[in-house]
Image (cartoon, rainbow, N blue to C red; front, side, top):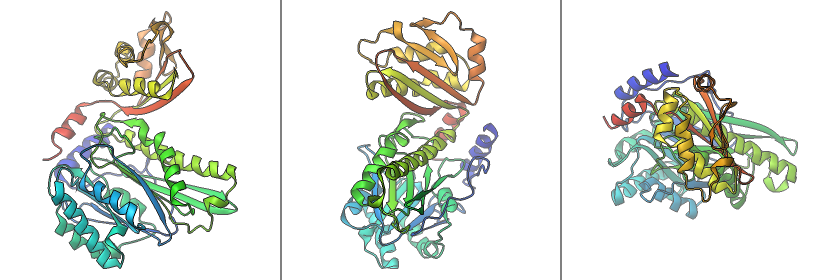
Length: 423
């Protein structure tokens, strides 16, 4: 992981390109009937780098989404929300390198110009195009570069364009994130495929920075929205890199209906099976973001159980996952369990009885009944912290609720990447 991060840091500084780790990332996702994708280099920020993506959806498609709760939401988020409510979506237009956020009315006008030109070229209405952006905040969107690239983008549309699309939405990511699932429902094959990006400014309050998921199942929009929110709540809404919620977070789900199978016709068992597959795909994409977090050398699973409810379990889990002291100890592979204990204690859990709290590093009991376990030895903790994948488990001993959050460590490279992000 370190080698990949060092090389990618150099590539990001020069704007030359990106790395793909084929050992971790599939070469492509399964084609979804009714979906075509394309990615081109438009020069939004750097030359010769894929940065403009188009997703074309069949005319029967139903579409839903969840968006950032950041009050300073980006101009494309404002426009996408409006368009999603007013027309049947046919296209997602996504640019990387420029967030078009903090740009006011000028930014909204820029997003609308892009929608209008794509609509003119394809014969749809502007409202049927949803714009998305990711990258540097506060800079004007280079609209003309995007408009000039649209004819090429349309010519490049391909049902097997998932991998290029996944690369085209990347910013500080070091590899594209793709996932696919194929199920047999009502005797027919149903496919779900998705891509996502995000490596920093990542503590969603809905989804990740950008994610696009498509299925050829036929699903009415109200049910589709319910499925998406259920999947997101235990995947993209359970990850954090740095505790910052982006201005541009968007997660979209489209159902083309081209499989010939409708959700309404399925048995309850098959409905549960599809929801499970969608949730598993979202979790795969979400955890891939954490594995590729800016400067990360550790993938960390924080599980809090024994809470009175989900909310207090999440409060404890996020306090641990977002603690700079915990995260730097993780980076150093230092079994400094006192930092974890302190994070639990400051999580504002009302009437927490510390004598019932236990803490594990991997399979090693570190804290028992509120203090260091008699069986704990530092070398045991060290063995756990030397792993690339680390688990922290906290048992509160006050209820039956349980929640899991995924996070990364905090390294020198995280600081370096973000200190030089705009240069």
